[in-house]
Length: 503
Image (cartoon, rainbow, N blue to C red):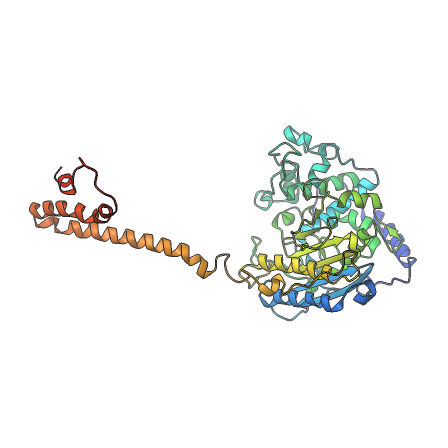
């Protein structure tokens, strides 16, 4: 079932005791904060954590508008604050058939690039915390096959900040027939500029980080994360490969991918699929409820329910800005990227191509999770615009619902982005604004056609004799020059149209 990286991994039998110890630890944890039956954080009324239920209800409106506009068939949303879930909702259905309703507790979504932080970056954080990874060490120390030329200068830190000089990606699915070949292609990727000197968001860098985690831990990425993170947190619905029994509650994605069949419970990203379904840049599936536990662990400084996953100093290091707007693995909120306009400077998170996002504002002890499958036969003309607006509206609505902010309660806007729905179901240029350019092109084409017609008419009498041809030659220039002659005075000493024709 799993891809073979052509090197040994620890067998599952050696991981089994960890599961047993984790179960005991969770059972012995603080019993006053019992998780919900389907997983996730315990619930509290918004007012109990300083939030307004009325203002949070805006979330329902903006997310439903995205469904109604055809941006995605359904969505799962969880907003949490101060250790509790305060808004947990499922909207619409898993697909357009309207048969399976979405729930925040049980519905599974392909996280796409959220994999980079919920999986790969987290694995690096754990190993760094253990003293097994040096962020400023060359990647070749951990991956001997990644060397030569500028690759020798690439450090783990460069990969985390997308400043390794690597391209955005490669079409592994076109050039590799096996996961081993895809892996070799990633390791052979050329570095295009001096590491540290340029920024390019790169899937290849995340894949290399996944390989580093595997090399250091001695386990495949999914196996290591399950034992070191997910099982300890009780995240039972977070994994790279969806079990057959859970496919029915998984949101489908592409209906006509290069693989030739509709995708459901199988990673949407073609390169992740080429790598065997377990990749550093994509491939993870999860529920909104599971992600709420993960988010709370980070807000808590690396622990949850008495179980420590990462040290608080490591969480602080990886989630603060390190280069531009990027943290280590994570992105930070700079008024865009789906985090709205009101989160604090210390807010961090990430988005996923399939229509997912996770944003955490540690200053407000708050997180916002949105899971959709906007790549599933979207009916809106611009589903990317729909999801961008809904993401930002969701984050804004959550912050605006905070009533105990030291900066005071913010005024609610008259309308949100989803209320305006600008360009959701039409091209960037509306038919009216686009018509200006269209009219200019049509006018130019009309003039060209008229000119061709005149030229054709002038040439038709040629067969009747040379006298007619000569007359046409004399008259045509004068007629065609009438407009230009009227606008520009003739210069003295220049030939008249008649004289020119004679020459």
